[in-house]
Length: 470
Image (cartoon, rainbow, N blue to C red; front, side, top):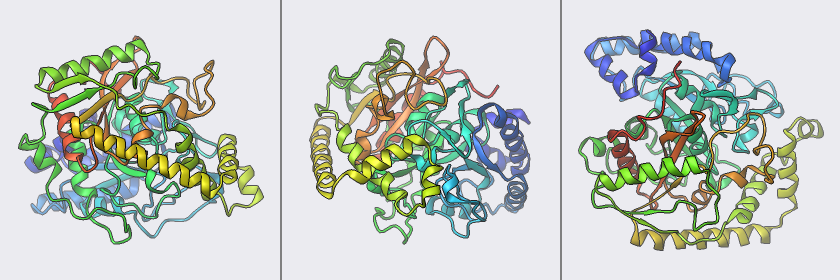
């Protein structure tokens, strides 16, 4: 059954329809892969095989009756341990959350998956409260990269990326407040989408405010569109949700409505020279851009022209972290990751006026990008300027960087602007580590970003990225 682990969610559903295999067989294979790879990459904080098999048996019965509950009925999924899941504790990577008991409530995206008949394999690793761009925590240790376990999987949704890359379920839910689905997608050779803010409802509200998005982490863009059709449904607990989606994301792909022919594409290889990009990363990304041009896009090298908003992002992010830990006891604070303690202290020292000044810069950045997208349908950049570095550290050793934002200059600006942004695998470096290309669209253009990403997959952009299923 090992071949089942290589199938996408779309392929699994097709197989259930024809009776080629059952959700029980697929779930057994996914659980076996999760157990086998856990020691090597540490993607999971919890694997619940008994519950997963029970859900798979129920799904198999529905398929036998020709009554699937939804478009992902019987598909194994994993959930980042930031999101609430009924029947499972939510530790958020921290000892400060206590032992926890089985949760009695699902986050909106989890609830939609449950209603659709998905099979929950387990919960995946995160740094404490998702605070940084790599995945290690005092409670659950270090998550390694499936391509080289001594390298980082990225973060903060690193466990989800590693699970998908190793075949432990084709679908995962991640969160992204500064790049947290795109960073690990780039490092682990999978697809991820940060949707427009509000497209996927969030509850409870994140302490990081409207920087934080929930998004799909999958094998390819078609699976992400499938997952978006499920998790984008409204939820009354999120007052900022955008409301019902007027179309099917997957249907748009199938109809070829959102390809790339005629699209005006701006390619910014290094944000106007201010980002140093590894030459092998730059070459792989240029190859993906050339492929977009071959597919009919009108490509122009152009920079969006904004200064690095990192200090404003730090004000928003560090203040959010301080809010997370505001009510903690002395012992709880002492148990935290030292880096998290540092940014919490920094955030607590910033004033309301500092915060509002950061909001002003954020609003101006959004205005600038709105004007930029009057001229260009898509912005294309590297997802990351480098490939996966040593696991267990926040920044590459030997660099002059102090915080994870120093090596993620292409990701966090688009959390500030709330735009949809995807990472598509487009090659490897000399060590065989994956490279990602980022596609960014104007707000509310999630279907456009998915369509362009899908066109790249159909054209074979990921063909040079070897599988991590071994």
